Image 1 (cartoon, helix red, strand yellow):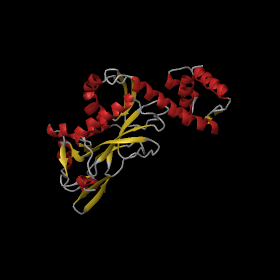
Image 2 (cartoon, one colour):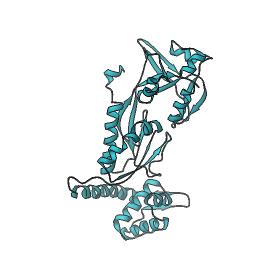
Image 3 (tube, rainbow, N blue to C red):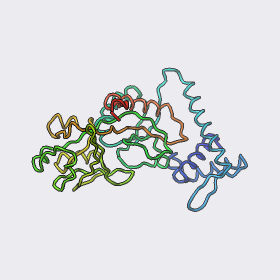
Image 4 (cartoon, rainbow, N blue to C red):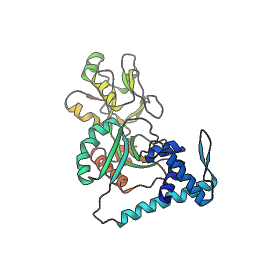
Length: 310
């Protein structure tokens, strides 16, 4: 029995709650994972897991052992990294998930520079706005906008998105240009709805001007759960959009979108890189997070409370 492989298999079963999922993330057969855990239990003479036909639960002894195993695996990774020369580059496969507009407009265009700096890192990038089972799907990190609701995740705030309200000229010609945000609640106006993954619902936007504050939800004929589809709907004249500056600036410069309510402010949307708890931040993940933070500093720097007026 390879004790390292056995400890890694055990830790992954605990994290995923399943021998099958653990095997998938480790690219091993379920039989191999099962045998490694059984051999580990035999060596320790302790039952680490309670198995049923539907679920795998960690025992009290297993929970204590798991905490030690996680630290030990992290220490081993650090030891290997520290023994490398100072000029050694991080290597390996990273699985990340990012929103579609952020991927297409910022991250992917900048990847050649990242690859030139870290040629031995292979990135598997999921592009979505969905909720990701980071442990079950063996995802190293996700990049997400908005406040994080899953308090179990570890996260680093890497930017703040400045938001504006926009509409296509075709929409404004057809419906008219609103002079006050409250007009978007009128029967003849429409917004493009965005269905947030956390709730599956469109949410109202808070807007402020001097001492006045409103929450606008509006009515829609189309709601989507993908950022690129959201922009496409606005460009097609299907309704008013709330967009971060990095998404809107090109279309605004070309006259394809018109900014509305310039005297009104919206709270900036924080951008986070989140990763599972009890997972060691490997060298490759650390440099990726730092790189995302560098990009966000260029496109959406973190704002102070004084700057936002909050």
